[in-house]
Length: 326
Ligand code: F6P
Image (cartoon, rainbow, N blue to C red; front, side, top):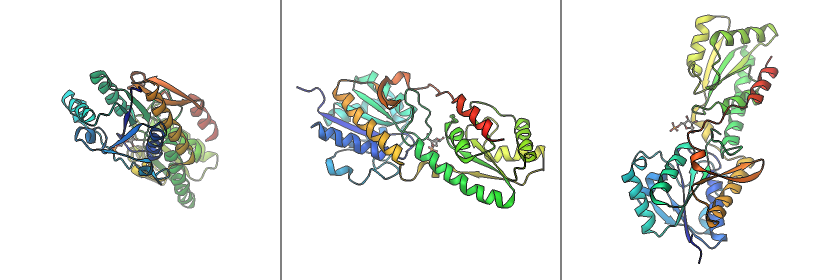
């Protein structure tokens, strides 16, 4: 007799392109392995409120290529409390659900680990966040699509920057991680990147800009991570203006458009791999772990080793960005 007969899936925290592909993979592999599968709508808050529905193989048709999450998402304050988690557990018990797949980021996994500790309910996490700020996986679902979106946006900004010989500060998401900023600095040929992990002083930035203009650059883009200690794109643009009036300066905050859009091929495949691995992991009695893909191999890492750990910035990419931006 198999221990796990009913699995539920939810998405939590900020949505990311490819979450739907992961939901589809979880649902289809449950059905493939003759396991009942349930959707929880609205993340942990939805679970607390009993928002549970059984799915069938067709429930996830035509969602592979759609952005957002069909299950909706939330950041639940109530789930942070024991009473909230007790209500959530009671809902799972009511539906005889044996295990849970939680798709999200750091906060989602912190909640999942606590839930497992409280009630011993088998849970596997799938990393879904545009930030790519989780350890123990090379990539998180949504990062590739978001960085493609940012690259496309900066290419467009560059057209107008070139036409007017302007300096643009472009702010990108990532919370306290500079991964999106660093990758898109290289992919868009920006002159500099301002990261949360490495404070670039305004005076240093001005030196970089001056050198670029001495080297006959006529326009430039600086990518600013939202967690940059000198402030976002607006603040940095103001500070540069306080020091010098040499540049015709503009700023753009890309904001939530980075989270939307159809997932890239890479994100669809990553999400599909991880969704299948999550179900196979649960059926194999794994619990309290996150699925990761490292060097194209599936790895399961205890959730506790995946929360509150800052993914260090890629020093090699930072070095490359400096060489190429002269
Ligand atoms: O974690 C994904 C993310 O988009 C971060 O990059 C950003 O800081 C945050 O979520 C924004 O959250 P919200 O949509 O709740 O404002």
